[in-house]
Image (tube, rainbow, N blue to C red; front, side):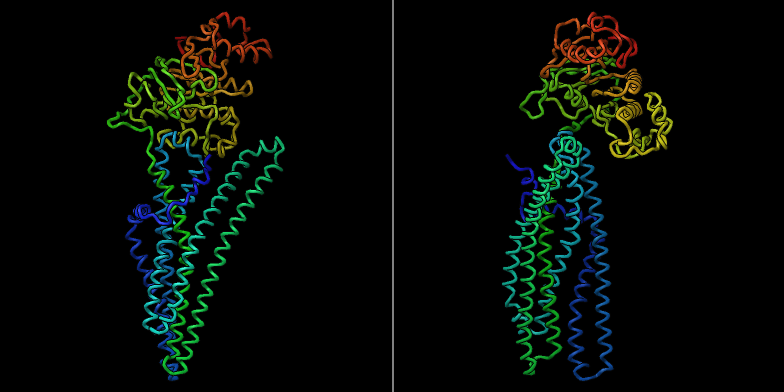
Length: 625
């Protein structure tokens, strides 16, 4: 079985020209800012290279002739050069990071915007944590590629080239002597590049595993504490932590050899320079100023060589990050508008499945030749065993997926003929596991829709009984519900989701077990809110608790992706089929076994006899179909 972490950290190529050209496409819009940035870089390098020449002229000129009056001018010139280096460095650094932040903004916005257009199937295959890393860490790596990689590498190469030229200008013989050790430096850099690449990859692999287990442990802390697995989890974390420590030490070892090695070679070069240059000074064929200038240049030669090794690691990380980011941007939505798709007009709410078959993996069928129809304004409940295909019906109706064969129609037209955005705006979805965003109650109802005013939000909250708990909150609808609605109870979150759905006034309402086990008073409020929410709307309800759907106009019983039974609650109970067996298991062996009475207050025998039920949460306006 393949290791997902191995796949995540696949090495790829150290440099990919195609990826680099694509990244530079994000730099191009900021060319007006990049040009002066490069100018400051060149001026900085030029000022640095001018310093040793000024020292040479000062030492061999006024200092050698003891002309102290003119020495001050050379000292001022050297100080001006040093000041210019600092000023150009400030301008270059500020401009580089300014442009880098603009690139981050553009790229992150594009990735986030693209993620919102991708189909649900993409998120089924890609964990949220992985996508979060892409839009944060990987994009930061690309910013570092621009700020500390490309431009800094260009600065280092420009410095090395400038230093070599100036060395030959100052003293060709000393320059040739210094170049003797350059092949050794290049060989060490090549060796370090290969070793560091492997070690850094191993370290990223270990930290990915460590972070994954840490995230899993924090999310599952309740389970860990309930079953007393703290010691076991600590041992596993200790092992993964130790693996990361060992890989980090191995990576550091490579650096601890390379950098001192370059430093040692630098010292060898200085020693050769001191031996050869000192003899030439004693012979009178080399001035002391020339020696000082050359020594200064030799130091500037080895410094960028050391830094280029670090830039290679930045380049490698950026190449891996760019490949992953562009893989997201190249992902096409599996469900998208067809050419010529029309905006959905105001819907009547007629829903029809015609011979629909579907499979998530292309092999295992989930729905097989499924057909049914729901009249506008009516309610349909869908029940069945786990895996029967209930939630798949919702996924197809909302066009999270398209059927493999057959068609899903609304108002007599295939969903694929409608513009996806205008179609979904006329559908409402309420889940049992309500998702609330960090923010206020009002923001969670409005969801960024500017057309929803405060009065409309309060009206919807009252209509579904959500105003009762909102009125008890410290700041009413302005109260922050915290991440995932941590401030609210399960029932309160459900009522808030009803208000949200009502605020957008959907023509088709989809409920995926929108009631849960709460106290009787909250359940009553939820049922009343559901009744008002469903009024005048086509409603499709996925039900796990059969006691909540007795009053649906029609009930579909699914089994292995097919319609096993269909009818009203009373009709299905009169049949000796799957629905009756499920009902007996849930109601007679559960609720009725505890009180010998169903939630509606009648005996099981009365229900099976098909007596008219009392009004309940799914009772539509105008009676049964």
